[in-house]
Image (tube, rainbow, N blue to C red; front, side, top):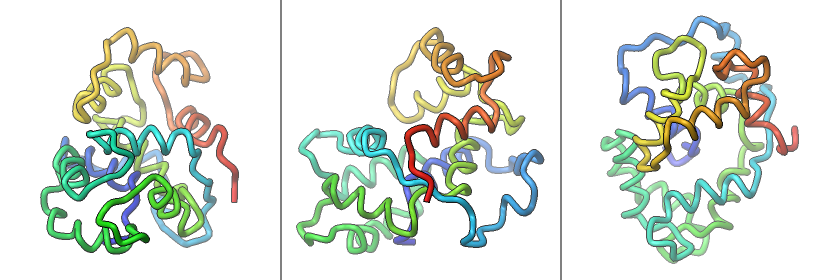
Length: 186
């Protein structure tokens, strides 16, 4: 449990929204296997800072167990509340009871970085109906669930910025290009 990364937490948003949803058929069974040989990317520090800041609600530069539990609650993972002390024991290297940004980055760099399976899980978070496409309405729904306000026009702009072929939706290829832009392949 202590090895669960933030992208895995994001995946649980989709499970909360639609527990009975079947995995998308666009991914092969090989994609679903975690062989350890899958490509990995080092997380972008600027993007990770944004994620960290989203969790650090009081903006004191560190994540408390209460803030972490609040994130779990938003993600519908109340069942993980009891595991928080174990997670903090694994991540809190200074043993001060908090996770600072340096510890947050070190934790997410462990294991070779962000794996392909993490990116697939993150895509599924936004693909609310499991059709293999992310539309502006999907983006807006996820952001609202995370407590972030975003207008429909802003969400449409986000989709257009990522949409490579101009069809008005983000498909897996578009998503992979966006998520790995600026990341180093390891």
